[in-house]
Structure formats: structure tokens, C-alpha cells
Amino acid sequence: MAPTIMPLMQIEDFDYFLPRELIAQYPTRERTASRLLHLNGRTGAQADRMFRDLPELVQPGDVVVINDSRVIKARLTGMKVTGGAVEVLIERVLDSHHALAQIRASHAPREGSVLRLADGLRVTVLARRGTFFRIRFDDARDVFALLELHGSMPLPPYIDRPAEKGDDARYQTVYARSPGAVAAPTAGLHFDASMLAALEAKGAVLAGVTLHVGAGTFQPVRAADVSSHQMHSEWYEIPQPTVDAIRCAKRMGGQVLAVGTTTLRALEAASAAGGLTAGRGETNLFILPGYRFHVVERLLTNFHLPRSTLLMLVAAFGGIQAVRTAYRHAVRARYRFYSYGDAMLIERAAPG
Image (cartoon, rainbow, N blue to C red; front, side, top):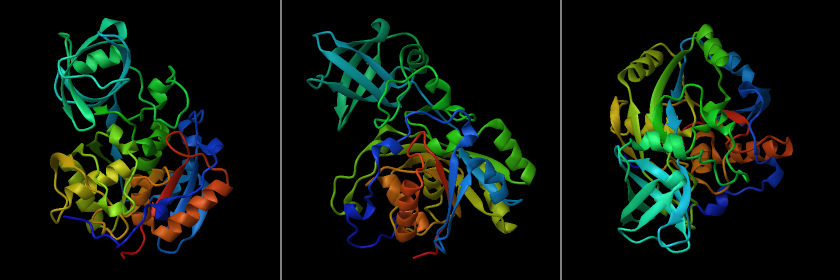
């Protein structure tokens, strides 16, 4: 089902000024030590809180839905056999020996060319698919095992440092189970085991989905009219127990809290046909202001890049003006932004 969009939305409508020093380069020492900006999209009211306050904001019978996707060590560096440095960023693992990847080099590799990556790992370029390349790992071992041995964590481009050993754990949620993402579902980075236990003790139900975030999540919107932007496609899966938990909560008056934009996109994509259903598939759902949400009433998310599709999704959920005001407040109050930054809890705005 195509989203209903407001006419003539321009990229400038989703811009804001962010001092560079507010871009978090490292996570907080403790996962739950982040700040939490609570925004009511219906009234515009906002409150400064701490993330550890979250159980106070959840009611018994609510469903907290998390994305259990696990980030793979998707970044590899090496050389072409003809010479020249090359960097490979895996976009998606296709099977035990093949993947789609972005390849950065002085000249784009040709079909059939061979790359020598970390520790002598041999990769053959098979074909080009738009901005990605289909590659084969010429090794008997599984791609996931090879990446774990030879790759590094694919930190986002706005973190101005190489990945360090500590990122292996901190750029990963504590509940990550399903390998395949090349970017973390960052709203989940604030949770630790004690927070999950506190939510369950409050009477909330924890449920899971899987959506493997691709590198396309950082793809800029280049179109002046944002409605003409083409979203990248991502793989997701909704288990039947999650569907059952959400249906039960809605019957009993509970609310659905999506942890992260990835979780929200998976749930909304799976309900596009008229009702939430279990299963797996691909989604390129682009959520803009005017979209009518089917499943999620509350969204926990980090602060997002100016002019990004994620900021557009948040504006659709919380209301354009309310989100603009909240972001201006977050800058003035010196919140920490992006993947390793602070969090927002947004109550969904009224439809329209």
C-alpha cells in the first residue's frame, strides 16, 4: 500500500543546524546512561529525562518490539591484483559464498577482476548491480565466518575514527541474534539486560522482529521533491508470536512501542495489505508526513541526520512542527546525536 504523502515537500523542510561537536564519537560508559527526550506528538509537549526512566513510561500490557538483527563485520580492505587500494563494504550476504557490496577504489573493478583483501582473502567480482557489486568469496568457509575473522565493524561515516575493539560489543545490541545487518538498529543500543528485565517486571511484553539494515540507510536524499526519492530495499521477518502479542495488546488496550525506525518499518511493511501478518519479505517502504500508521503508537529512536529518510519518518510519526521544535531543543540542551548518541521517545501525532 503506497503511503499518502503531502504535496511538494522539499528537502529543506527536513534540514536543521547541528554543531559538529554534538555528534557522538563514542557510546556512554553504561548503555542506560543516555538521556531521553520524551515528545508527545499530539500536544507538542516535551520533557528531558534519562533513558533509565523508560520503565516509568511503559504500562502493563504494552508490547515493546525490538529488532534482533546482528551487525556483521562488513568492512574489508585490500588491493586489486592489478594494484591499487580497495575497500569493500558488504551490503547483503546472499548465500554461503556470495554477497552484494559497495567497492571503493580509484577505478571501479571490472567483471571477473580479483581482489586480495585482509590476510590474503580472495574475492572475485562477478557483476555490477547499480551502485553495488555481486562478489564471490573464493574460500571454502562460509561468508559469515570469513567476515568475523577478517572484517571490521562498519561504523557509520559520521564517526570520524576507525573501529576499535570496544565497538565489537557496543555497536551491537545485547539481544542481537540474527546476523546480516551492516548498520546497527541504534535505538536498541541503550538497552542492557537489567532494562529488559525491568520492562518485563512492569508488565510489558517483549517481542521481536528482524530487519537487516543495509548501508543504503545512509544514502542521502538528492531529489529536491523528497517524494521522488527511491528507498533501498531491506529484508525483514515478523514471527507469529510477535503478531499474536500485538493483537492481544490491542484487544486489551495496550500500546505498541517500536524500538527503532527499523522495527517500525518492518511492522508497517507487514501490515500494508490491511492487517499485520507474520512472514518474511523485502521492503522499500518510504514513510513521509501524511503516512497513516497501522500498528505502532510509540517510537523509541535516536536523533537522525538532517535531510535523511529517517528524519522524514520521525517527522511523519511525531508531526513535522513538533519534531522540528524537539530537535531545536535537543541542540540547545546539548543532547548527543546519531548512532552513539541519546534517545527520543515519541508519542504518535494525530493522523493528518
